[in-house]
Image: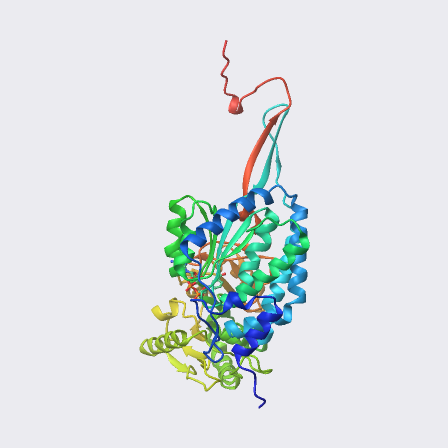
Length: 505
Ligand code: NAD
């Protein structure tokens, strides 16, 4: 096997090519490591609370200037950003692989997602429309207008280190907002690279107000500044349900708007009529892809007893044979977990599954170039026990059997999270019931594809402990704007609504 360069050497070369000055990621107090080998790949600087407050104040001023720019012109800035991302896709995608540990095609896919949302936002910049509404009063017109919300705070998770920012920022910029971003402390270098590309797009655009796109590196103490700042009317927070619980009440206490994108515990029902070839392929990607570290990762398979043995035989084979190792190598499908703590959480969850009567295959440590490498695990469970009901951010697929379709839906919905879901069936009645109000209770419900790998055109997000936020496509842009209802009187009378009379002499 050919020797690959060290992640540190590769990251340095990529950051140079992406235009990130060495002074920004050497000699600082934050430590960036690569999960591929566990080695340190950069030492950027954490923002102090004072620097964070100053960035928010500059962003406020930027917002006041940016809201005056016509939305299609704002779209031109995002178009240029999309061009920069296209030009830098190979470098940024590889940096995502180095810093987050996902296989190269997924690193590149993450950058493609950024490009796609930029394209979407450019079109949207000419489509920020409201309604004209029938009014009960003669010679009046009623309509709604959408205005920029202000400074949008973005807190993001390690597992989509750059795409989540783009889902928020591309929309926020065309909506007329400024953006202050606090990325995961585990992935600061990709954030610096994105910020450098924003700088290039801004230089080409020519008149982007200073601080329109700010980056604050650091841990939750830096995120807390965004959470508590009354200057941030919209806070988009992506991460664990524990984080959302800590953040949501504080944003609510200051009457801010929170877009919460939290943990998932995604299930798929496999009905007797399912095409098992599709199920095996979809399950392999959805449950083992990204080493089980997607919010939409498939964690629960609810299988009809008539097909369970046949399916499990095939899944065990797929789990035994999947290629695990350095995510930069062609052919690798499962890379490292983000860190040793994630490995320990996986071990503990599998021990809990066994204690609940589960039969576990896989999950063992696999030799790699130094990081935390685990074989994805299948856990055949006698019931949906407490450990199955919680999200363990690792490649564990819990398999449960069902007999009656209604029971399958009850098991499916019987968890606190509500992000993504699937059914595999060729029975139209089952498929439609799953998509109906009596079916899946998730924000995403699919038929004959897995729960993972959403496109940006649809609204993304989930219910219950997933937090209820929506990002990306459809009309998710409305969360980044404020709505005003306007009534215009073009007559000489002053009729009051509901027939109220109030005539002064
Ligand atoms: P995490 O909750 O540990 O951290 C996420 C971000 O929140 C980080 O930037 C962190 O610094 C910040 N943070 C944590 N506590 C905070 C606090 N009290 N105040 C302010 N900021 C705080 O999550 P993670 O381990 O980076 O990511 C994995 C989790 O994210 C999983 O639960 C996964 O399902 C979820 N996730 C959800 C989505 C979605 O769209 N629903 C997408 C990606 C990841």
